[in-house]
Image (tube, rainbow, N blue to C red; front, side, top):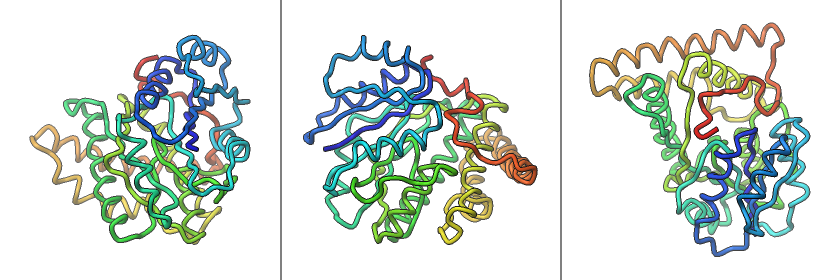
Length: 301
């Protein structure tokens, strides 16, 4: 049994597309798609549009994505390690082969988590679109290497899958795509990368949204120092410098893109300075659905 869980936040049209992207796939295993959203009107909209009995709407209390996932992990839990959870978001959509590519990886019993490959739908001709394309390309390079070396790496919250019956909950104070792979790693499982399982992402298109999203992400990862201090860090300022600085400067194809890369260096540095200042002021990461809505990442709503 495969449980596909789509967490969304008042984005009915985007979520409808996300659900249909799975329903259109040829999935051999029994599966169920559950959309988790704190707005009843989203459920009403989806139920009118989706008549497939494999679709379920779960009304969340709005206490956070991690809280909702914990509830569903326990409710949908299974003793069969071949049963899977596939986790994704309502504001993205997956490629037509994504489930097969992911499930094929789990044929290896040593694999506990599998992450998909995020691809930007933003234009390379815009600064923020170019920034995202560079970032995703860098992540792709690192994940391919770490997967080949059988080393630990964090998953992508946009699309990743785990075996059931291994964990039934996880800490709420950090991002699920970081802590869940580590919990599997501690139990002796490997992490793998399904680079042909693509997930298409609309990213922030202005400075305010970009900064809000990234600050929240960095705070979630810095919380790992308290929750799992022994965890190998793949997302940090030092790793960005080590893995990304030289890689990024080789990506520009023209003078305009070269200028954007220089801006990206300063933007990332400012991001970390801002985050560390807020953390010192006790402005810690909180797992709300979206404390500050990132309007420019909503592709259809």
